[in-house]
Image (tube, rainbow, N blue to C red):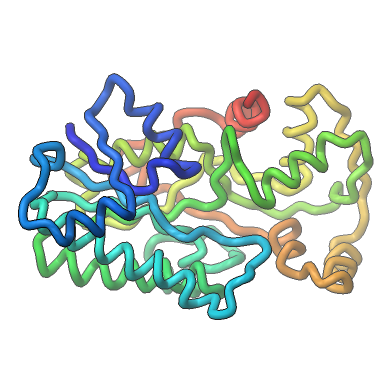
Length: 297
């Protein structure tokens, strides 16, 4: 199988390339190359007979946003560039377009696991532009008979993880008690191993065509369990103390971190039964193994 990948230098892209070594022919497509190819009258032989274009490139959530027009900053990459890549796929006569979206399309929190049938409810610019990209891609791919596959992962972790997950790991490494023993939320995560395994499956599986999938490790854990796992893998004591959730929520609100409180105390689960039943997929590794591989980096 011959694959064309955007965002190959990113967090998921680098890991995917390692996964593909010795299995499939994979070629990287940079943003500059996309622009050049859209202007070209003919294409290099490298881009001939590509089976699937895997579109990983996008503007991810930024912890300390500096852009004045936040929505447009996300839209320029997540919508406008995505549609340019789709147009290139059409010109190259690529049969399948795989789009890495986000569970943020569904929302920021869930009282019960999200499913693919739920009405989207994104709250921030990142989630909204991912949803708009999905809608535009469905229209484009239907019009040009391209098989579209949309994958919405929750928080992705693994070797090289950054942002809030990296900060949590650093915090857990300190021999300090943390006040989350009474937090009994449930959150879905997905390791790079499981996500890239699912991406490869969706790049060729006949039953993945024109479908949207939610995917995770299949093990939903509380913040307390996450901290315990990180410290257990790192051969540390759990050192968790029980402070009331309402008190922690108020404390985070007072210091202007309500969003962080939602991620630490709120629940966000996804139902992966569609991926299991329709594609016969099972997570490749356990959550514990995923944390072990993350900390081994």
